[in-house]
Each structure stands twice: as C-alpha cells, then as structure tokens.
Image (cartoon, rainbow, N blue to C red; front, side):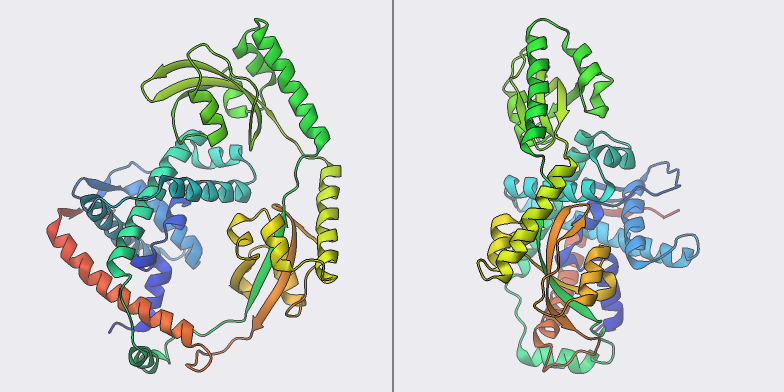
Length: 441
C-alpha cells in the first residue's frame, strides 16, 4: 500500500477523487501576472482541458498549500502535474456519468451555485469586485460556474452510486492504524464552534425610500420618458447603467430567480412593474427575444443599510444572547430560527471542527482562544453581520489513537480503500476512452 504520507499529501493537493474539490476549482483565481495564450493540454473523448483551466486550478492549490510559484518552481510544477491528473480524472468520470445518463436535481445545482457566488461576493466585498476579479460580467461568471457545479455534482453522484456499498471491517481499520500510525498526521490543537449569524438588514425607512424612488422612476418610464436615459442617470447597477441599463442577451440561470421570472414573462417592448430581488428594486424592459434567450435593460435601486440598521441588528443579537443565557431559548433553537447562515442553521449553528491556527476570521480566532467550552461570545461584528459564537469543545494537539479517535481512523481507512478502488476503476475507464495529454510548457 502506498506511503500514507503521500496519500494524505495528495488528498490535500488535488482532493480524493471521491470527494473532488469542485468548490475550490470553480473559485480558483486567475493566474495573477500571467499572460497565457490558451491551448488544449488534455482531451478525454470530446471533453477538453485548457491551459488556462489547469493554471487556475494549480494556482488555487498553491495558495492552499503555501507554495510560492516564483520561489518554489519545482514544487509548483509537481503540483501542476498532479492537478492535471486530477482534472483528467474529473473529465473521465464526467464522460462516464453522461454515458450512464446520470442526472442531478437542477434545484440542487442552483443552490450550490448561489452559495458559492454569495461566498465569493462576501470575500471580495461586492459583485462589482467579483466581476473585476474575473474580468467578466456577472451573468458570464454565473453561467460558467453553473456548468462547473453541474459537472461536479454529476461526477459526485456517479462516484457515490459506484462506491456507496464499500465497507471496511474492524480488522481492516486496526491494520490500517498499525501500519501507518507513525506517519498519520497528528491532531493539531483545534476547536469546535457554533454560531448564529444575523445580517444587517435595511430598515423600514431605507426600504420605503428605495421603493419610493423606483416607483417614481416607473411612473416616468410609463409617462413616456426614455428608459435608457433614466437608466444612465439613476440606475445603481454600475455594470449596465452606462449602457442605458442594457444587459445583453441572457438565458435562464444567468440572474437571480426573482429577476428572471419577471424578465422572461415580458413581451418585447413591455415594461415590468417593480421587482424586488436580493439586490434591491428593479424596473425591467424587454428589448428582444431569440428562442430561449432575451435581451433586457433595467433600472436598479439598491437597498442600503444605515448606522441605525447596524445598531438594530446588534441590539437584536444581544437580546438573543440574553434569552439563551436566561434559558428562554436554546442556542440551537436560536440558530434554526434566526441565523442567516443557511448551511449551519439547520444543524443548530454547528460549524464543526477547526484547527485553531487555521481560523481565517480574526474575531472567531480571538473568541476561540479566550472562551471556555460551553461559553457564548458577546455579539461579534464581521463583514457578514453580527454573530454569537459558542465554543462547543476544545482539543489539544496530540497523536491519533484507536481508543480516542476510532471514527476518524475508520474514515481515513475507508477513504484509502475507496481511493484504491477508485484508481482501479479510473484505469479501466481510461482504457475505454480516448485520452490524450500534451506536453506541459
């Protein structure tokens, strides 16, 4: 069996195939400072891998692993080779998924897509900054990412169907541990956290002001004033305002649901009523329709938050903390009812385990250092809103043992077994497909 350190390193670098890191891949940044003439670096039947695609993925992995391409060119090139093999495997499994007519729920695709885009917008600060980062308008980013999300969900579904019956015996787990205990990565100092997140929402005054402004603009459009001129003067969408609000031809999936439903329901020349979306209030005019695509223009009035809105959110979170401490509600109930973090709210706010030195949010890192298990922080403000953070558990750095860490060792052993069988299946599939790899430059 392969050296377990290499196994864990490869899992970290390119992802165990069974748990392919699609979220990392689609969020990969452009290769900074690189001027790339694109070319095909690999092909699997009719699926291709572009050099730009490979570089984006490799750079994202380099960031995760702390590899500096300029100072560590050999390590970066090795990482690029591993990344290419991972992408080839992805295309092989994707081709097999299409051959087997594997399907995924499109609502699940939309859900994952929106979560990923929301996370990236929050990381960069705004939609405009995300567009600048990728050098593309939001609709193109959305379209490209949606294709990537759907492809990876198809692959994951295929792999789960193939390997969900893989079992591992107690004896196999014990053998795995005895063979590799000296090279297993130790448990670093870590904490388990839960939180309740409350976004800073626009207050009634802000909503009313924005609604009054968009109502006035709608009346002016319906009164005969030129839509494009009003969009240039008043729309708060910087990406389209200078073009008279025109968005160009779009298809379903390019924009948020509320906007699309209103826009696709219009006839050419028709103007919508006021449409509310997560971005604010819109008035939409349909310019043209070509099959399943439409060209529309819009005027956007955004919903802005004020200092009073921030104070209201903080006061609400503080009262929520008081209610939890007084026993009027539980932390889990508060998270399920009030938290804006949909991923953790349904789990009672549970965020899981984090290595203490890997916590990225400074405010979380500080409370993880100072709280005792079971304690709840004061309201914390981050770029996402106000949080209550509870330290659920803490564990010090140590080596794995069967007595204390059976489940973790069991999972490692099972992943190793699945990976072994996955690699065998991948080798068989490759022989059944046309796989061509170009020399890397």
